[in-house]
Image 1 (spheres, rainbow, N blue to C red):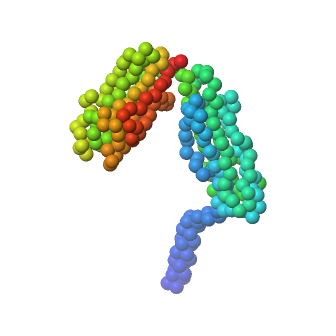
Image 2 (cartoon, rainbow, N blue to C red):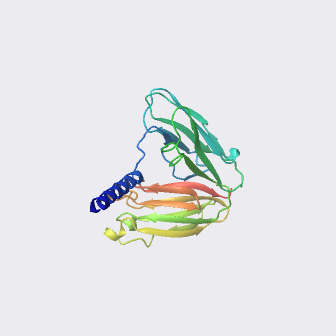
Image 3 (cartoon, one colour):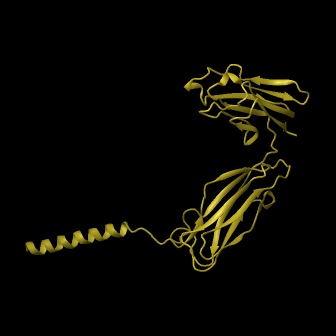
Length: 255
């Protein structure tokens, strides 16, 4: 009788191990296609920049692989190089180039979703189940939305007292100035210390000027300072490191 119980117990233990093994099965086939980077990103419509959406194979194939994408969004807001591409035999990637159209209209931000839709020879997504890195969202930022509440962020180097800045209007009048209270110099605390300034601006055109009295910009040999003047997603002036005695940027507000 005891032997029967031992036999039943052994069968139960084996069944338990078998169940665990089934739960731990990992899909190991690398023959599939997906996007190299599916993280959401944004693009200001007047930036002139291009976003590359790259389809990649898990393994190079012995023949050409045709891949296609679906693009969902307002077609009047973007251009894309193609909706299909060829990954040549022996290679592992194909690129779709995406850019925003600067339409000079106040039509708000817009999301565009790019998704892998088909492949001639391999499954889409890990395990062929359409999972993981098969679609990407690109937000197009409308640069024409009225914006007057600008903000300036400055990160100083180890000699912040050398740094000042100003904003001049179209008549060369100084409408904002700052940096006179940055400091102290040559301290660990001053390196890359962040200063934030609100600079509301009326409609019109301006010049932003960053100064360094020593003439080596915002670079002390250890760290590089930087600045960014922006309104929402729109950056009108930015810089980093050694720019000499001054760096200026012309920009317009709601023009």
